[in-house]
View 1 (tube, one colour):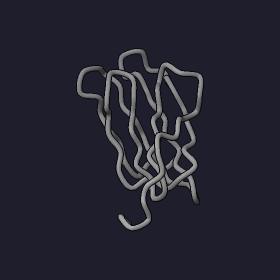
View 2 (cartoon, rainbow, N blue to C red):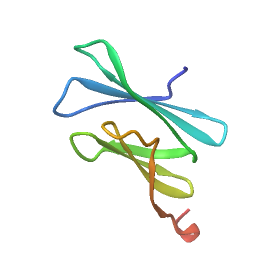
View 3 (cartoon, helix red, strand yellow):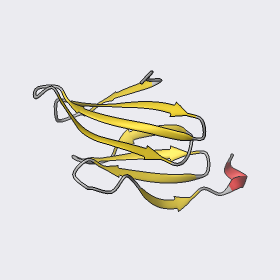
Amino acid sequence: MKADSILMHKERNIIAVRAVAGDQTVVQVFDIEASKKLKQAQVPDVAVYWRWIGISKLAVVGKNAVWHVDINSTEECTKIFDRDSRLA
């Protein structure tokens, strides 16, 4: 995977790697100390901004919607709300 952005967690030794692939975004989360992948999720939107919003949750702002990726959940990602097209 060719990453376009990497985000370090502010409290834990984990990093999130993001890559836009077509009309979706692939997010992978790695534990640096244990050298293992914690999560891989495909967000069905092109990411324009992202950040850690909790101990185990990433927020991904896409062109069309806002998504949450929880590294402790078995779900890929959760759509929180659609973005208003007037804000583009």
